[in-house]
Image (cartoon, rainbow, N blue to C red; front, side, top):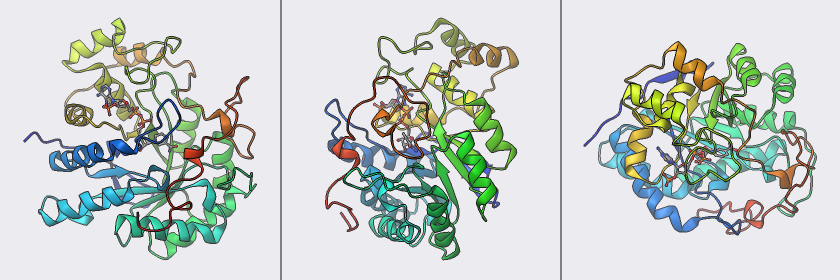
Amino acid sequence: MAKVNIPSFKLNNGMEIPAVGYGTWLGLDEKMEFKIQDAPKLVEALSYAIDIGYRHIDTAHLYRVEPEIGQVVKKKIAQGVVKRDDLFIATKVWHHYHREADVETSLRASLKRLDMDYVDLVLMHWPMSISQDGVDEKIDYLETYRGLEAVLKKGLTKAIGVSNFNLEQMKRLLANCNVVPATNQIEVNLNLGQKELVEYCQSKGVLVVGFTTFGSMVPSRATPDSPEPKIDNPTMVSIAKKHGKAVTQVALRYLYQREIATIPKSLSKNRVLENASIFDFELDKEDIAQIAKFDNGYRTDIPSFWQDYSNYPFEKIANPIQGIPLSLRKWKNGANLDID
Ligand code: NDP
């Protein structure tokens, strides 16, 4: 079987985090319904990922697959493929749990679903606080962060961090926290370089973890009006050819050379392997200069249905989607605190 050897970045608390992890968000379909039917494929692909050498798994309460992840991990430990200590498992707290004490409730429920005693990292998924009924709860994210500091102290997680925080929110958080967040997980890709935010985080010892790192490049995400580079972009194809790699591998390698960890999601074994096979080549200055020109601030993931809520982190758009999709507010068993 193929194997990958994934290097790690160091977090500000001394822990190591593998530079490429496995993303587990199955996404929503055209009707904005959650693609739960893909869960068995995720189990297959994640099992394969661990077999070939992935050691970092990114999940969240929202993703509804914590039980599946727990089962795969348990099986791989029983088979002697990994030990729990070899793995870096991250989960996230959803919008409904932003009161300080609710953070612990949320994390304990994640641990129960994962069937684990601790996670390696827990993140505040977004800075907004929204009830299941779509009410803006207006809870300050500093309060939620205090809840994260508390679960760290209790040993329920080894590190804490945030996600989708903009520059201003990061500055305010760093001025008001006791524990510097280990990571800020944000959209970053060739169109959305996030130069200022990335440099700020890095200057303060906060590792940037990138999501949607292919942006709108891959066929499953490209739209008629999304900008270059697409997967067949001549500049990208020629850089990829020069290194004997795929365009998607060049995109991930570019972020690695910016010291950004990535968590690409794929249900295809070939692509799972390909996405982690980026550590045997190096982009040179000329490649980097050419790739940098694609940074035009274009965002692929725009959850505009949240844009009028307090602490929404992105620029507002003119014609937002009206109403939060039900699948992002309520899912099986409402708050879904029980095991399934
Ligand atoms: P990705 O950029 O990882 O893209 C995933 C899409 O690209 C899928 O359609 C996948 O299809 C396809 N794909 C994957 N690898 C390749 C490849 N080598 N060549 C061509 N196509 C490929 O986006 P995501 O939005 O899924 O983000 C990754 C992860 O980040 C999520 O799974 C989740 O863990 C996290 N995330 C966090 C967010 C946050 O708010 N903190 C928001 C969004 C994501 P296929 O499965 O068929 O290969």
